[in-house]
View (cartoon, rainbow, N blue to C red):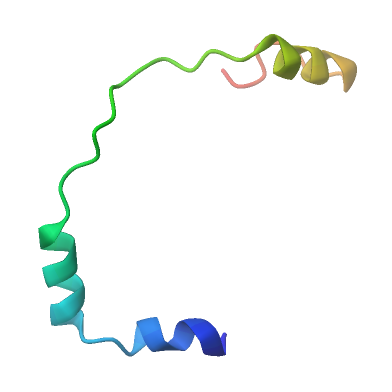
Length: 53
């Protein structure tokens, strides 16, 4: 708690200025595809393969 308290007390103007300098993330929207390893693990613990849907 003490290590993050400094962020709570930081000047909001400085926070907004820092955010304004940041650009949008360069991410392309994509559909998640579960790996074979993840599907095998879900099957092993008894979860249906369409668990995330």
